[in-house]
Length: 84
Image (spheres, rainbow, N blue to C red):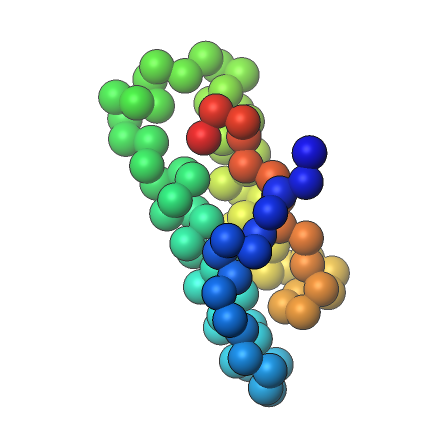
């Protein structure tokens, strides 16, 4: 299953790499807010250990994406867990 990032992209205007980097960091931050930060301690406690690990792995992949090869113009964002 491919992750459709287009719903988050909006319009990233062409320009200097710094503008693209800011846009991509903002996108990464939005994905963290929408898919990870919504899990408060009570909701997180309802997840299985496997789901908790999957969420932690997804979160770390988003945090590490700025170090990925091709950052910021040619990166592949991780697919969020199916239960998100």
